[in-house]
Amino acid sequence: MKIAIIGQGYVGLTISVFASRHHQVVGFDLNLKVISDLNKGTSHIEGVASNDIKDAIQVGKYKATTVPAEIAGSEIFVIAVPTPLDTNRKPDLSYIDSACKVIAENLTGPALIINESTSYPGTLRNYIKPAIEKYSKQKFEHYYAISPERVDPGRADYNQKNTPRLYAGLTPEAIKRTREFYSTFCDNLVEVSSPEVAEAAKLFENTFRQVNIALVNELAQISHALGIDVRETLDAAGTKPYGFMKFSPSAGVGGHCIPVDPSYLADVAEKAGVQATFIQRANEVNLDMPKYIAGRVEKDNGGSLKGKKVLVVGVAYKPNVADTRETPAELLINALEKLGAEVTWSDPVVGSWHGNDSVALSGADIAVVVTKHDVVSAAEILKSAPYVFDTTGKVKGAVQL
Ligand SMILES: NC(=O)c1ccc[n+]([C@@H]2O[C@H](COP(=O)([O-])OP(=O)(O)OC[C@H]3O[C@@H](n4cnc5c(N)ncnc54)[C@H](O)[C@@H]3O)[C@@H](O)[C@H]2O)c1
Image (cartoon, rainbow, N blue to C red; front, side, top):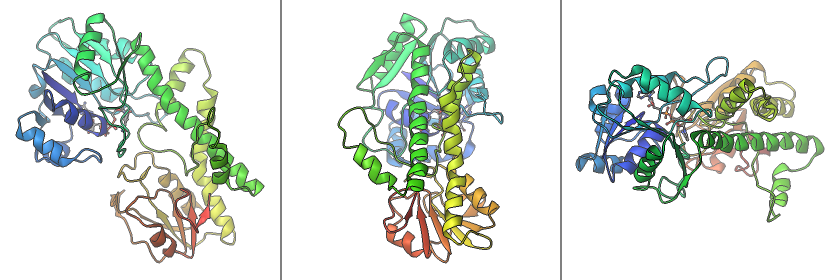
């Protein structure tokens, strides 16, 4: 089958590589540099091997393009574009809208249109289908389905093949076609009764993480005030074999999903007349963690950070990826600078960020570890400054969160 995958980022490229083992895949994206690199067989996503892209190109199963006409004639279109929040922290579906437009303008017959982007319940039925119909010149009966993506970039144990995949469609034929497509490269498909259930389940998975991370971050603050080691407490609670799931404290949440998706649920809840209070409070706790950490560091260092050289270690939002979207490191840097510190950052995986390059792990008065990549040794971090504050629990000998 010819499959067009709209968006060649974390989700779209991952799917493209798996799907290209069985189908003819055209990866469409607006980013010229990404497309040019992909056509040279160079991956820009951790967890997607350049060799896999090269192999797929060589056997004629994958092509990346910025040319809309090249997706024409596809039997399946997969939407994998960003779904961020706007400046008011409300759902921004403008990328979905532009993906629908490019699909609609290149439909040559009835096609299966699957949304993999995360959005609120009702998006497939009330937004994507009407948008495709609005932008299409020819009126075909298309098949609409949803299969929210669960990829965890950088993770080795779970991938497209062994991660159970939810799916639902607007019609029985859409459901059948979706099952046939994903069963070519995914072992465990879970059909749910409506697209809205699949959309809500995806949002709830990430809301569950966001709320629990906020809960342990609050526990970290309580534990410090009581003089108790929070990680030992969590390890102790984690020995209970049922009814408890361990989360770890941190500088906050980052990435494209955990800080964003719960607000999609909160927004749709508000429109339905329900106040999503847990989500609101969890957002506040997580967003306040950098300020709390800066305050702890200031207190430990004579009550002032004025003129002190502070090195933030690890600015990616999680270990072993270069992704800095919504990283708590940004809020931490702002909080430290507000307290008068001279802040630099070190992260060899990210390399360059906001027009600045990663600096060496040395010469600071204070180091604050936000993210510890495997390639950065704890011993090197400990040597970088006389005072090291660790939010990750991975730098033994440092002051712990
Ligand atoms: N990154 C993750 O770990 C993850 C996991 C599960 C679900 N998701 C969801 O998947 C969706 C995509 O996320 P991502 O992380 O892959 O984003 P990304 O930013 O890595 O990639 C999106 C790509 O879409 C391209 N794009 C934007 N508008 C386009 C258009 N109109 N036509 C073609 N290309 C377009 C961008 O240039 C970019 O390359 C989001 O809804 C996200 O919430 C992400």
